[in-house]
Amino acid sequence: MKKYNPPKILIEKYGQDFIKKYKKWIDNKAAALHKRDRNDNLIDPKIIKKSHYKLAINQSIHETDGRCFYTQIELRWDKISEIKNENTSLLPTIDHVNREKYPLKLVVCAFEINHMKGKMEIKEFISFCELIIKNKKRILSNIF
Image 1 (cartoon, one colour):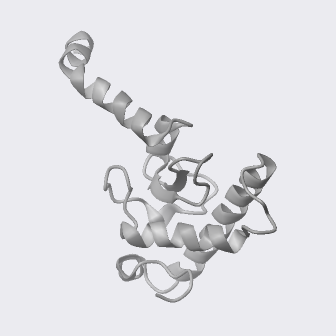
Image 2: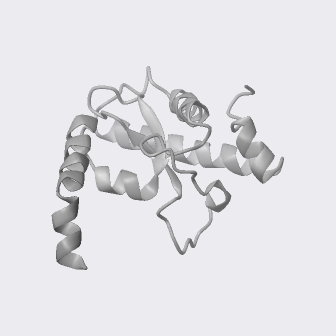
């Protein structure tokens, strides 16, 4: 794997021009996460650099072949870095699995999944998802 290159499957799908767009996206995400974690005193910026975030982000994307870590849904990599996106639900974004304990444990996921998870730790998020599934019949019967 060349440094910060997308998974082969994404290059095959989106072409060689996608590599530059992908690297810029990773750089922007790493800068934002590094700044936020630094400002919240979760990391020592003398030890953990933006480059550490870039590596962690790229690794997380390779581990799932660019799919959402939580759902395995195929993400809309063709829409990254666009100013206006009509539907953001399948845009890729980066989530801290447990920000306070492990600031560099990052996963790629769908924007809407990350939004739903919010600041919950992974076990809490899964418990909430299980409650929704447990109540699925009641929920659907009250809507339709």
